[in-house]
Length: 124
Image (cartoon, rainbow, N blue to C red; front, side, top):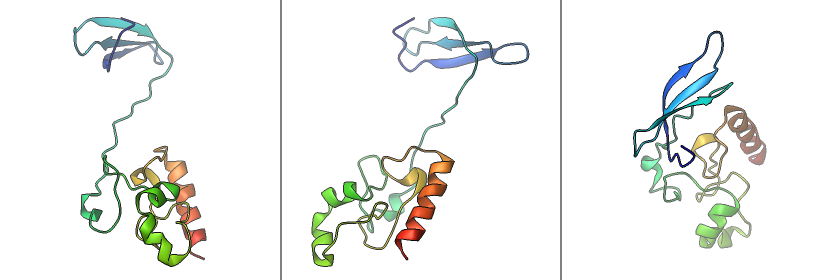
């Protein structure tokens, strides 16, 4: 089942630890047992940003571009200020986005904490 596209994990097996996964092909329903020592579960990311659409630029998936990414999308906003947006600054000057809601973020708690600290420093 090397051709698995978006397989569903059906079962995790093992005595005292993860030893194998039973996965199922979404199209053919064919199942396969894969040896494994760990399992990472990613539940997905859907930003709840629709309420911000009138205030800041959103990408096509609803995430908030920041820094150079927003500069390319809304360059006219920055010309009167005589500067480019700061690293985590959104399309609304002085407003910053950090963590999972930011376009291009790595979707990790530790990164979000670090980005928050960067945004606070940027405002000083």
